Length: 560
Image (cartoon, rainbow, N blue to C red; front, side, top):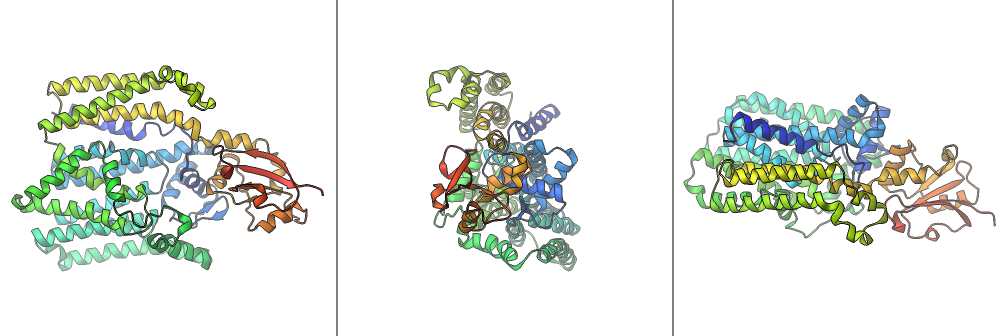
């Protein structure tokens, strides 16, 4: 029934709703967002897309492609005051691209009906929704990996080797989004296609005609990637080059880049847990499909075996690959999430067993329960105001459009449950519809409340408004976090120069420095840890909470 044009339109509309809901409703959040937005803003204002900068300082963790895409959008809008929404809109567009190529790939591998189902399953996976509402380069990386995989699948399934050229282009995009990990992730999927072809097809994909096109694609990849690498190397010194090439790539792999964080040296089940969490609410179907593969693989047709083997190598091979490095983050799993969506969609698209219907009812009930909580939250929270920060009382207790959206979502879910029990819609469509409603409520109520707490704009501007603009050129910074550097630049267009040592701080306080007369300290446990000279505290603020270590302290020298 879902194959009817009416249901197709509904699915496409809800996919768009899930992708774009909430992207303009909140400011920049830590971690990552202020830093990424500031680097993108600097490209927009300086035009330097070769070497990324953070508030005037070289910051070369990632290649520039994602940041350049955000910068282009900033230039197009001409408004830096809404940079958060602009950047998230670009991220959502990358997400739409991922869904498109994932759907096309699933359609080729699993049949015509699987394309739309895969796109809908992927669009409502927790991992997809979370990360494509967050400003991170992994959005562009995921797009280029998925687009390249689609090209490779078309080559192996339709014998069109000319697609090695766009595959090389997309592989270069993956490299320019996040470095060497992009081509490596593509290589895992490519190895799956090669293995499956050798085992269940022929070697026709390795004849001279195919190899020529493959070499052409590799040359295109090398030319595009190498051009940027060459320009980058020509513009940076040896230390910056080593920071990008050695520390950021190999240091993360071995764990030597301790200052980068996220070290998980012996956490071998890290990405297994991530896969289960990111795949929700479709995790059950993913696990059942895995069980089916093990149980029925021998009796499957050669074509089915080829497709199944490819998906398994891509999905499980990437999981194992990501587990090897010491540095681990959930976000690194995002580019392979479409493979898990295809496996889940392959089971759910035609499944209507008793256990599937029970699980569907449980998910639908969970969605209704949470939407009702969002609806009544302004009244239900009032007895607990003593446990809620005072600054959030008005936001928590004041009903608004979020409650209207939540109650509407609740009604839609009830309608879906009734139709499901009448067997008028399938388990897939019921879960998809209910999850889409849940996400609309989630971004309309809880996310708005969290934004009141995590919003950096208000608290940072409160601090900056007390520092006269005419005095800022004479102020230096000490030990600013990346978030603070980015916040000052985004909200006040102020690139605070950073001192290199504690001696520089004390020299300013003694009046011996001819360039600066005061200092703003950040990331300290106590001012006395840095300052040895008499000082006067001019201003104190906590844009990132009440912890002293995240505080800002503006000080100047005091006469002895």
